[in-house]
Image (cartoon, rainbow, N blue to C red; front, side):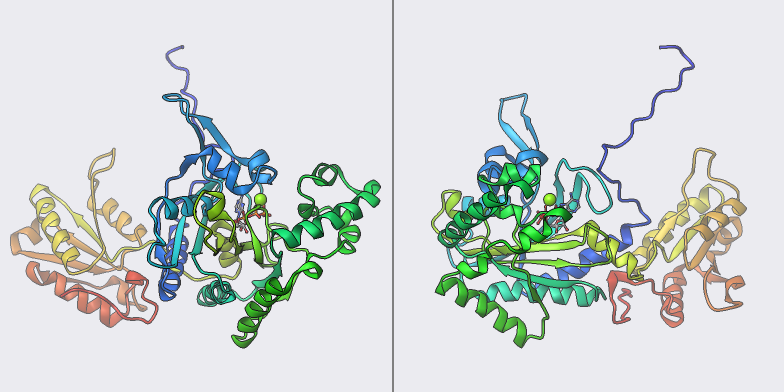
Length: 455
Ligand code: ATP
Ligand code: MG
């Protein structure tokens, strides 16, 4: 390699995004809100590994699903030959963990998780190869009540986030026996119209005909609209369950539409399935999908255990929050500490800790590649930091045991204010100033305007 040839830059993996500091406050706002809502319904967090044995998904999701067919990041562990997969979703992992640790030994459990998922899809708006989900899994619950509760929890979350363009689509896909009767009729119907099926549908005709109903191909819409409807095949128990969910939703004023063509991607679903959709995000408009998956625990070798859950696509939801003009606190600190001289720097470290003890967010000026910089260049950094105050320690301040406090942001005319404050009183002074000026930039994401500074 020639000496002066520039080293090539390494860029990130296609379809996997960096979440940059400018977007972090939006993520935090979402994460805090969703945690608060989940907690308010008694859900407990579970954290499972990102890597799972490949058979977990192959068995759990069903071999003929989109995910298992073509979207999984699977690899062989070169150390021991194990077949491993980056999780494409979390239900399988959560159920595996619940079984492995016998979490439902003393009754049903409400669980939730958050984290990155991996699917090898064609990247586009709202569809990435690494994306994030927040999901809930209610394991061991059999009745329609928990289905309705999960849906209500989502509605509360949209409300708390100020999102009013998300609507609920609901369906029941019955049990295995009901689906198999429907399936036989469905195959017969599609076979009679074979000439109208696209390649995907031809391929699925015998493996997974239910998924044909889910087609996005405009040319097939009329055909699938007139196909036999699974809802007409539901037996008494499935019907009663579906009615039960609807009764609670109606009584709780949660609007929904029944979409008889709604099926879910994974094989493990039964009875209630639902999606939350919006028209504001183009073709990637589903922000959350969920449903009941009673057969899954048994498929993993556990005793029959009913369960129900949902997963939110975080990127899509954040996109929607941006569209809705969601306001969130930008990255900011309370104080930027400026210092000049080696004694002043040591003092600045001491003061910085005291201010943090008092609950303030403090950025202490540190040397860049060009050095610590002049007073003027430090003040520029202070301004750019978004801090409400610059606290300055120079030689004079060291000598007089004071610090100079300069207001950087405030009411008109206030911003030129600078005063000398005794070193020991800077923390108290700033806390009082911040409270009285309402300078609080949303510490602890407290939306009711309370400020939590320690004294
Ligand atoms: P789609 O039909 O859009 O492919 P899906 O049925 O595969 O969705 P689920 O497995 O139910 O999606 O995942 C739940 C949610 O996760 C989706 O509703 C969506 O919001 C989000 N999601 C799924 N795949 C992706 C992806 N590749 N990129 C971003 N978000 C995704
Ligand atoms: Mg998909």
